[in-house]
Amino acid sequence: MNKPKINFNEISINSNNLFLKPLSKENATDLFALYNDEEVQRYTDVDIFKNLGEAQKFIAEYPKIAEKGNYLFLGIFSRATKDFLGTLRLYHIDYKHRFATIGFQLAKDYWGRGQMHESLQAFLKFVFDEMDLHRIEAQTFIENERGIKVLERLKFTREGRLRQNFLIKDKFEDSYLYSLLKTEFLEDKV
Ligand SMILES: CC(C)(COP(=O)(O)OP(=O)(O)OC[C@H]1O[C@@H](n2cnc3c(N)ncnc32)[C@H](O)[C@@H]1OP(=O)(O)O)[C@@H](O)C(=O)NCCC(=O)NCCS
Figure 1 (cartoon, rainbow, N blue to C red):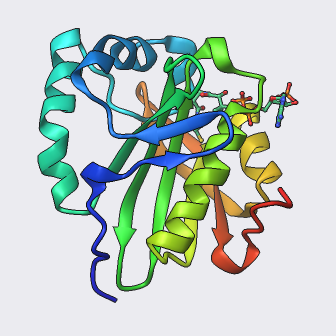
Figure 2 (spheres, rainbow, N blue to C red):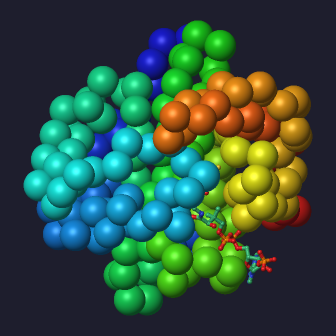
């Protein structure tokens, strides 16, 4: 399968209450705050921006990265207030075998309201229908109960426990590997 003719820079996805789109320079402060919140990043392996300038640089350089079609990074926004809620990432994209990995983060103020569930429903519909991917993977640290709940509510299957595959703060951590197949994704039922 060839790379899809989707321009990652022009992606705009709507759900009932939210919209997903690439970040613009006005979002740098919020992005920096999200990635520097220790509670949000407790169970993730994302590279933290060391200062606001690094977040600004990432946003400025993203269009070039996106052009290659190998890394998709979207902001989650409220349709009502236009507030920035969090981010979704699609990486390890394999167009030959039609799978990819997702990563997701929500600012703490928005936890416990079903916002990530709604974002991922819309995002998964996009990756299965528009990008025509067949399998989506996600990994969570075994103690990340919120992350696990989000995936299981969306009917991801836990395929196994990966032993010590992340080196976090000088400690090797186990994670669970989850996957969802296109045929299992029933947009209205999850
Ligand atoms: C993982 C994370 C995105 C989960 O956020 P969340 O708000 O708990 O997830 P959801 O948006 O799906 O919301 C589910 C919660 O909202 C509640 N909720 C309220 N209205 C809801 C609705 N209409 N639909 C679904 N859930 C709803 C649910 O009851 C649930 O609450 P509970 O956890 O107390 O049972 C968030 O904790 C986070 O960003 N963590 C840090 C980053 C991270 O770990 N990412 C995952 C890496 S694998």
